[in-house]
Every structure is written in structure tokens, then in C-alpha cells.
Image: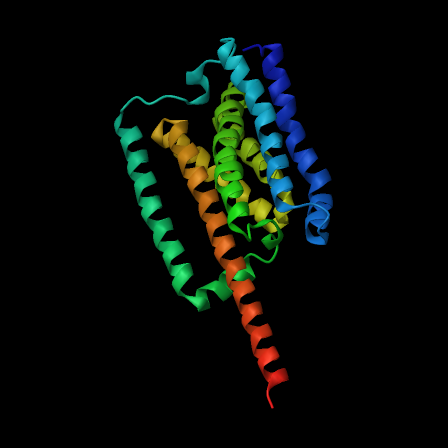
Length: 249
């Protein structure tokens, strides 16, 4: 199969995404931690970073260069589709319970706080940041990353290097795009990419994976927000106790 020039452009954009992420990650992290860049600005830049190649891909769909079926945007009401829908519902219940547990279990918060150390700097700490993270970053990541790394890359690569090699390569690139979270989390994200690819193949619809991906990102944002709020509350409590001791007769 010969690629259209537009497909080559999208492919080059996707290849450039890990390079950009690697190049910018440390600078962005330092800027946010130092207060030179707000989290809202970082979230907005992330959305532009995700949507720029995605809009290009969608333009190819409108031009009928890329078929919707090629990137998995369909629902056949097949058994595989409905199994995927059940998976979405089960995950939703599990994540809701996870949020409830985090809100009510301080010991669990401490464990999560230690787990989040490498990327706590990017997690929302206010309601405004949580809103942008949820409806901006998380929704964009679910839609854009799945269209690009699962829908498009698997469709393109599988014709040349086979499905298995395509799964490995697309997941590797997907993981590299998250290098800003640290190497360990980038590797973990690459593994998630393999899982998402497997679910896409088994459920026969990218729509399932888009929803799953967005739900997981929204969940991580809510957990990050709760942990950050817990840290802020603990700091306020410590300051209050210190002030009380200082003013005690």
C-alpha cells in the first residue's frame, strides 16, 4: 500500500511527538515548579500538542484519504463491541470506588502520594485546574492519542511490518511521548499502550478504547487533585497548630 502525502505528514508529526516531549519535558517541569508557567498554560499547550496532528488526520478523513473504518471509528453492535461496553462499565464502577477510597482513607493517600512523587508537579491542585485537566487534557488524550497511536499507526504499520511489530512500535512511541512523567512512568505508559491495542483488537472498536483511556486519565487527575488537596489541608493544619503554640501563654 502506498501512503498518501497527507498520511506521510501525519506519520511525521507522530514521530516528532516523542522528540518534542523529550526536548520540552524538563523545561516545562522546571518552569511549572518555579512558578514561571501555570499548570493551566501547560494544560493548554498539551491540548494544542495533541490536537494539531489529530486535526490533520481528521482532515484526511474528511477528504476520504483515510477511511473511518481504517482507524476503528465504528460500532457494529457485535458481541465483541458489547463485551467492550461491559468492560467500560466495570472500569467505571472500579474507578468510582477508587475515588471514594482515596477520599476516605488517609493511609491510602500517603501511599498514593509516594507513588505520585515523580509527576505530582503536573497534577491539578485547584478546581479550575481539575476542570481543565478533566475536560481538556484527559478528553483530548483519550481521543487524540487513540486516534493517532492505535487507530492510525496500527493501520499504517501493519501493512508493512505486521500486526505484532506494529503493536510494539506504536506502544513504544506512545510511551516515549510521556517521558515528562519520568522514565519509569514512560515504560508503564508504553505497557498501557500494548493493553489498549489489545483491547482495540479484541473489542473491534476504537471507541471503546477512547472511552477507557479518557476515564483512566480523568481518574488520575481526580486522584491527583485529592492528594494535593490533602497535602494543602495538612499544611494548613500544621501552620494552625504552630500558630496556636506560638500564641499560647
